[in-house]
Length: 134
Image (cartoon, rainbow, N blue to C red; front, side, top):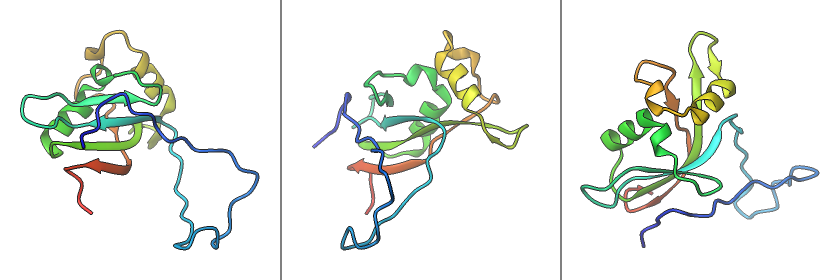
């Protein structure tokens, strides 16, 4: 089975309190929430295809993140779907910058963000498809 956008993302739900470790047989794990934009990254199924980036609302935005698309084309196998966060690192401040992320996401001209500018980071929370290893 090949996943193609749009794909509906599973979203976090608010809770009054954290569940105890006995809620699931295998235990409960928690992960840090990054201050970024949730998205899915799709690598092409075969040669000649395009890397696609889908927002949580279903929009395709790969034209806004050419550095991430280039890194995915160079480093990731075909047939992969990654669920993660778009992040922008501010090297001068030594931290993530949500403001820079918002500016970049809203830029009318993607070329305004050349290589050497503030790079996009992509921490992935899950992987699906033929390119994933178990």
